[in-house]
Length: 273
Image (cartoon, rainbow, N blue to C red; front, side, top):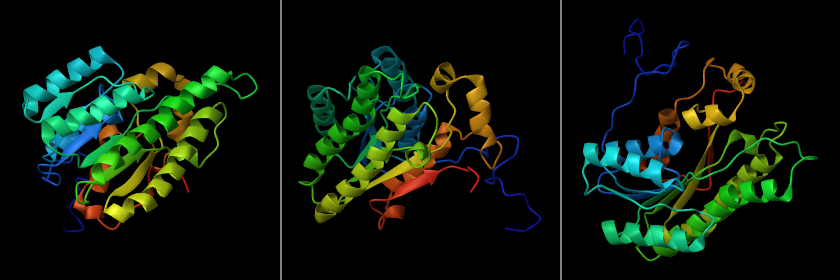
């Protein structure tokens, strides 16, 4: 590229770069994405996987929102490439049903994106056992249940499967009022590394992304404007990430471009060093 020519993919101080089109990186791969309804990282990931040629099974604990997202994606990409099933990742029976559906609809399971998570804000001295337990059960135990279900199936298909977990930079960095969420995300990171060593024996890779601030409507509802402003101020680009920017890194980890990566936690962040 001519140095004088602006780079269309470079970060803009006033907003994100142009949307990156698909390149068929995941053609004919079969994927499961949890917490995939709506406009967050899961929804963006579902769209990006479809744009890269994958067939997807969407899941979410919110049945109405899942139905709406599925209808939208089906209209755009076709009913043969999109399936869905409500799933609460704290329920082992529902998790098993989700993975069974993926195999029934698409014949095999190639990619699993564990996106389901639950946050909240509470100082430790005021935090109840229920608050602590609920965040850990959805965010860490849910990732464990889905990773276990994925690996049990992938180990019998001759290798090549990929699991991508959604962690967070908060698993590395402290933040007031986030002890439960930070502990859960740090646990996801450790789970990723240990699962990767086990899964390597049968040719399956396990990695994770660790976003800092990817803004979407649900996050806005549960976060104060003051906190969002503070978190944004920590980003070198002076803006939050778009959910699809995180999804792009998930696509990379799910694709053959990351074939020699496993047990890695990839920070998707522009936070100051």
